[in-house]
Amino acid sequence: MFIAHFAWWAPRQSGLFQSTKDQIKYERRFGMRSEFVDCENPEGKEGSKDDWLEPITWDEAKKADIWVMHSKIPTDLREEFKGKIPVVAVIHGPAEHMILQEWGTNREESAFTVTHINLAWNYDAAVVINKHEMDVIEVFDEHNKVRYIPNSIDLEEYPIEGTRWEYWKHPAILSCDVPRIEKMPVHIALAMPRVLKRIPDARLNMFSLPLEPIQYFRNMFCRSKKRALESACENIQLRNNDLRPFMRGGDIGFNNNYSGIASRVTMEMMAMGIPVVAYRGEYTKYHPEIFNLEGIAQQIEQVWKDLNDPKKTLKKDTIKYAREHFDRAKYIPEYAKLYQELLDKK
Image 1: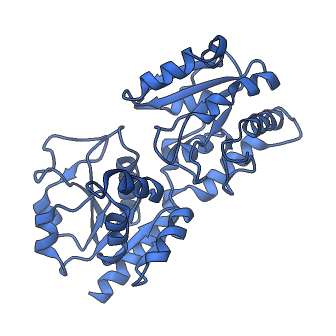
Image 2 (image 1 turned 90 degrees about the horizontal axis):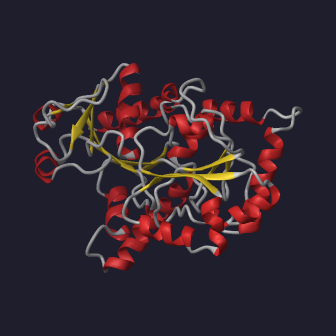
Image 3 (image 1 turned 60 degrees about the vertical axis):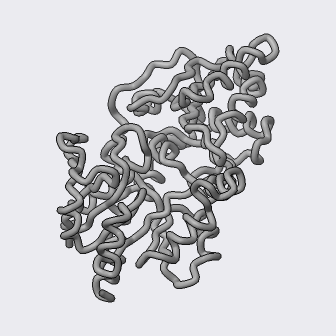
């Protein structure tokens, strides 16, 4: 079976790209021919290579049995092969971002009622990768085309042992999310003065901040009373192409996503033994009330107590959960089953 995955070519810049790469790796191990197609470059960006992954040309993609759309399928290809090659649309989400994008742009840009619902309606099948997204999109699943296959990562890329960043202060609290409508790395920063009252040596470490909103964060930190927010941080960094050393050296992760879904960085941290505080989600028991600064501080304190309790095995339990629930290899048979169903219908 030949599977062609259409996505943007963005190594070490995009979680969507990395997820597509993980999918291809484990589909190949499962016995499929699985390839990456750069949806913007017909010739596959000649000379491009990310480790073992190289994009194929659009002409080669025409020979595939199944197309999987992560970003888009070029219009010319889609029109030429409509009805000939089954297409699976992977809805990476999130719904909240698309809904507010639609309101804010008067539908001049990407819109939820056009983009997300069309993904569920206009292709042979659609896949959502978290339960929250499934709860939303199933309301529009008019033709019973949507499947829920949980998000996951390549656990081989996140071993416990490896280069480890040495923090000066502990617990080193990690925030690794790019700011978006649905995930705001602000409340963990605002909660830090309350955290310090409970754990004086605690420090926040913020990673993956894009360049555009840096002025906002600068003003927020520098204009806080007695610059308390600035002194509560040990590291504040722009985008980084490898967060693994920082994750391994950390103590506690914070998931900024207010829907509570396990974002990619959440799964990566947990795979390397870093327990996470999140507003909800079965992957952690540390749930503050959403945006409640005192509640965030309380949960950070509780995690730190549990990590230092010799009677508890929080770090081992965190790794165990990640290995049982976030392994991409575990979910490939579900994709293979879906692909075969579409081929049988064809």
